[in-house]
Every structure is written in structure tokens, then in C-alpha cells.
Amino acid sequence: MAETILELKDMRVRFSTLDGAVDAVKGVGLHVKAGETVAIVGESGSGKSQLMMATMGLLASNGQAAGVASYRGTNLVGLPKAELNTIRGRKITMIFQEPMTSLDPLYTIGDQLMEPIMHHQKLGAGAARSRAIEMLKLVHIPEAGRRMGSYPYEMSGGQRQRVMIAMALANDPDLLIADEPTTALDVTIQAEILELMAGLQQRLGMGMVFITHDLNIVKRIAHRVYVMRYGEVVEEGETAALFAHPRHPYTRALLEAEPTGRKAPPPATAPRILDGTGVTVSFKIGGGFLSGPPIVLKAVDRVSVSLRQGQTIGVVGESGSGKSTLARALLRLLPSEGAIRFDGRDIARLDKEAMRPLRKELQIVLQDPFGSLSPRMTAGQIVTEGLLVHEPSISRRDRDLRAARAFEEVQLDPLLRNRYPHEFSGGQRQRIAIARAIILKPKVVVLDEPTSALDRQVQKQIIELLRDLQSANNLSYLFISHDLAVVRAMADHIMVMKNGVVVEQGSPDDVMDHPQDPYTQRLMKAAFVNTANG
Image (cartoon, rainbow, N blue to C red):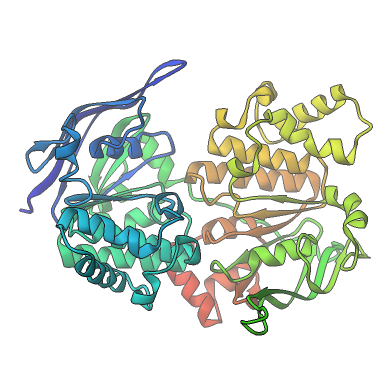
């Protein structure tokens, strides 16, 4: 029997707020053995991350932990900071969801890797540098020695996450806590990171706690699962048994939360609403008096697309494939070459002033609603902001009535429109972003990764909402995503992009069940979903 590394008993977390005490974790117990992967799953707000933050002594200043978090017989709760620091970062390490918030943008990757090595292992700079380079090689960072001098912004999302893994493993920990480490990554990068972590775990014999809302990942990597809801564990068990025979209604709801249904294509007679022919977007890199001519990078290379009224085209591909750049070029948000026609009109050469009246009919919903919603405006003000530009003659009362109707359309209580963005959940904020777009009655909406940061149950709700809005308003969608299960539920035509070109396209059944291009085949294999079953 493997030794138990970590055992939590009656763990509780309470936060003091202006509205009173909030109990985020309510008497949770769990254990992790050496060489074992334990998954903690649940929706946002279930307490899964706060449970492990309390274990590590990393709660916010208004948070308080109680109970027992025993690491090899030592209770970490209430342990003096000096003693705790001999364990965390050395024996127990943690990887967070977004590496850009964990890596200091002012320091090189090498400096940030070497610091914990020098602190915990008492090594000199030369030995620490050698160890850091060794770790970068271990996580498959190419040209490890050279990349020691890189800054975080000079690396891709997948590379930054590999750096975080290298940093977490540099001191040979007993236990690795991974908090949503792959949520924002493309499916191929996600597959590589998970395979890397599993291989390193086997090699090092460490225990791992994997916090996630993605059950496809859980099914693939975890030995045991704890399901949390409202701060409590509602079910636990061996992964295979829990997936095959879930006992708690909430667990069953999580397992059934995959986006379902298919969208029928529009009739062949549906008019073309947005056409791009030979669309090319180029960026110049470098260049100057001493460095010679700039390098020209073609982010989108002679791509053609035709979107019909009522149609949804799903655009898939890895980061850097050009899918978002293509969408912005079609909306004339980026300069491009080639022909672009909207509603029968050539818009490729229109200037900013000539495009302004068309903006209300060409809308975009972005990936991160919290980043795209002004924190200083109420939800109602955010939703009606476009009306001030495109329909300035209507009265304040009429704008407010329009806001109330838009809230109803996205299934939000209109009485909430006087609240600020931080007072809403992630799913509610995405509904506000959608309401801001549809209040203008557009003909085309670009949806750029609108569900990637949402829990599966909320994702399913947003997908159903988008389909209902499309049907009610005869909208045309360009839907960009790396989540193939979501794309299948939304799109009636799929384009696969790689390095700025379309390598394959067709119906969801053809592209996802019978991919022809090797790159598409690799995407489908990496998706962890049985696309044949939808």
C-alpha cells in the first residue's frame, strides 16, 4: 500500500466580507497517496481551489482556515510561516491556471526558475542555473539555455505553462497541486501538458491533486475523484466507478453537462451575408537602419470564407493558427488584402467613417467578459453603450427599456441591470456581453472563444442561449473555439486552420468523424472527446 502524503480532516474556510461571513469550505476531508492522482471537480464557487489554498496557507487576508491538513504527520493549518516555507515550494508545490499572473513580467524565466532552487536547495548561482536548464529540458522547452534569458511575454501559453511545471518540480516535491492548469490551452497543447505531467509523476513518484471542471481530463488522468458543491464533498470514489455509476444527482448533472444537439444548416437558398475571398493579413516584425529589412509574417494567407444568413461556421485550430485574426479582418478591425463583401456590398476598402454605420450589424463577443466589461459602468450602461453611438436620438427611458428587453433575451433578470460586473458570475457576465451585441440587432456576430473559461454546465446553458438567439433573430455566427465538443454543438460548417491557411473544411460529421488532413486528425485525437458520439 502506498503511503498517504496528505490527509485533510474537517477542513473549513471562512471569508469575512462587507455582507458578513461567507463559508467557502464546510468540513471537507480527503487524502492523497504517493504516486496517486486525485481530482477535485465542481463548478466555480464550489470551494475546490480555496480548499487547497487553505492547505498551502495561501488564503487572501480576509480568509481563515480551520481543521487539519496533515502532511506526513505535520498539520499545516496554523503552522508558523517560517516552518510552512520549509514545506511549500519544496515538498508541496502548486501550479495555477494562468501562468501570466504567476510569472513576473519584469524578470527572465531563468531568474524566476533559479530563485526557488537557490532558496530551498542552498545552491550557488552556477549550480542553480544548471538545474534550471535541466528542468526546462525535462518539460521539453527547446533551446533551454537560450530561453533562460526570455521574458514571459516572449513565450506561448503552452511554453509558459511548461515553465510553471518546471518551477513546481525543480525541488523534487512530494506533492503537486495543479489548479486548472490546462483550461486556456488548445487541445493539442493540453494533451502534451497532461502527458508530460503524467510522465513526470510516474518518474518522480509524487502525488498529484488536479483541480478542474473538465471531466474529460479527469476520466483520463485521475485515480480517484472528489466532487464538491457549495463547499462540501457530495461524492467521492474511484474514477471508473464514479463515471460508470454516479450516485449523487449533482455528479450526474456534471456528467450530463456536455453540450448536446446539432444545428441544421440553413437552406441552400439562404443569401450570403459575409464573404471573404483571398483574405490575407500580414504583420511586419523588426527592421530598421541597422537590423535590415523587416520580416513579413502572414498570419492569414489567402483564406476564403462564405457565411450565409442563419449559418454558424466553426473555426478551429491551435493558438497562432490565424482564426481570430481572420475574424477581425472580416469585420474590418484589422487591415487586410483580398475582397470582403457584407450584405452584397464591397467593404474591403471602406475607411473608418464609412464603416461606422455598419458596425451595429457586425458585432463581436470576446473570450473574457470580465476583461471586456468596464468595471466603472453598470450592466445596463454597458449593454446600452452601443445605442448611444448608433441610435443617439432615442431617449434615456427608451434605452433603459431596450436594456431590460435585452436582459430578458439573454435570460437575465432585468432588475440586475443596475449592478456592476464584479457582482455577477462568469456565466452571467458572458450573457451581459452577448446582450451588448444583440441589442443592436446585428446580422453577423463573431463569437471568439465565448465559453472557454466557463464550467461545463454554464457552457451548456450559453450554447443553448446562443442557438435560441440565432433562431429568433436569424443571426449568422462565426464561432471560434478550441473546444471541439462545443463547436460540434454550435456549427453547421467547420473550417480547420493551421499557420494561417485552411487545411480542411466541411460538415461537422465529415470533419470530426472522418478527418482527412493529418493536422485535423491530430486535433481530433487530442480532444479527449468521442466526437463520433457527439
